[in-house]
Structure formats: C-alpha cells, structure tokens
Image (cartoon, rainbow, N blue to C red):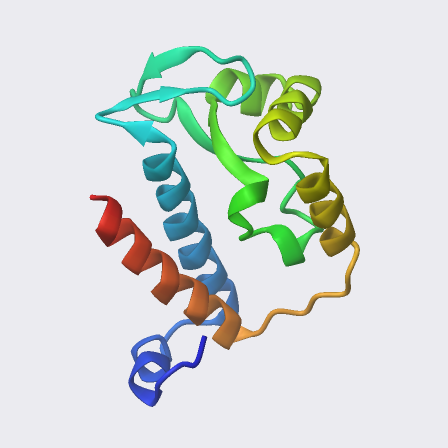
Amino acid sequence: MELTAQQIQKYSKYSQPQLKKKAKDIFHKFIRLRDSENGIFTCCTCNTTKVIIGDNYHASHFHSAGNNGAIEFDERNVNGSCKKCNTFLHGNLIEYQKWMLKNHGQEILDELEMKRNLPFKPDRFYFIGILIEYNEKVKKLK
C-alpha cells in the first residue's frame, strides 16, 4: 500500500509500539466483525454458537502472533474464537488445526508455515498501512 504524506502525518505523533497496538486493535476488531453476525458468533474451534458478551469473543491466531510478525496480520491465520478456547485452552490447537484444514486446506497451512519462518522487520509505515486498510474494512462491515 502506497501511503500519502497526509496519512503519514496523521500518525506522526505515535511511536512504533503505539502504532502496532492500534493496528492490532483495529485488526482484531475487523476479525470479530468478519466472523460474527448481529452479535452472535460461532467459535472456530469448539463450534459453539454464542452471543457476544463483554470479552467472550476473541480474534484467535492459529500461529501465535508473538514471534511470527510476518503472519500476525494475515486474515487466514486469525479467526473468531471463544474466550474459553483461546485463553483457557491455549487456542484449542488440535481442534483449530482441524478447522483450518477444513476451511483453508493444507496448501494455506503450508503457506502460513513457510511465511512465519521468513525474516520480518516491520517499520512504522507498515503499521500505518495496516491501520488504514483495516479502518476501511471495519467501516464496510458496520
């Protein structure tokens, strides 16, 4: 994404860690909106349908975001999950893998695996691009 001077200026007061946090927040909001409808969601791992209440609905990463910056904002790697599966069952990874295979296929799993092992060093412009892209996507889903 090509950034304009105006877009860069808009975010100039934020540090890179602040930009990353803002990018994560809007990306996770997009995932939760994308994977729910009218305040109801189905967990990608336990397949339970629930009403969104408080923080019971998460944007769950198949491959952890912690050390995998290259896929942290990859929509195929992040899906709507309930708090129980994502937090208390640490992602419920066996069921998550089954879901990923069924919904994305082995080719995408292989691509994510390859991509996560690539060296990746994001800069502030990367996070500004994420912010702009996902702010637009969120607006379209509302």
